[in-house]
Image (cartoon, rainbow, N blue to C red; front, top):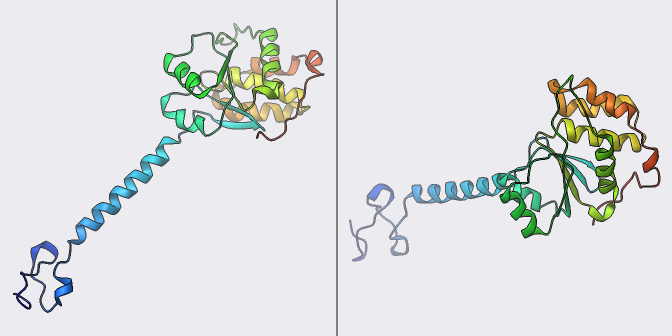
Length: 212
């Protein structure tokens, strides 16, 4: 059909639209609009997926975070934290991709290599934990992320010693440790935290203002 000498009017699926004025000669197929909306949804989902926290990520205190080992999928999320430092508790060299990320974002790496030990052959180096705590307690290094491989044992011990310095009761310290370690909780780790001597750290701050 033609209206006022105009071209044939095509609607959805190429069908003729009868009785429409000349200003409405063409109606785009609805599937185009649906396709565009789906594309926008996919883009939104991709943007959301970029902000992926590392395994076992959590906030410990103002300016202090903990997690398992971050990989490239977590980098955009880490950027959102505006980190100044990372406190790495494994002896293995930091991967090149992670080192490049730190360099590109002006993040300082502090490494205190603690071997992964399993019961009953456990040797948690108290002096290494003490030195790591000094870095952790220095607000000039905040915001800071503590991590080991899984964010369970080595990270859990360091955070537990921080909690002891903050005068948490042992029950609360162990509860927090067990939340992250779950079925992998070790009696030896809890024993280490219980016996850890905080006396040499008394002059360092144990509470922290919000990061700016």
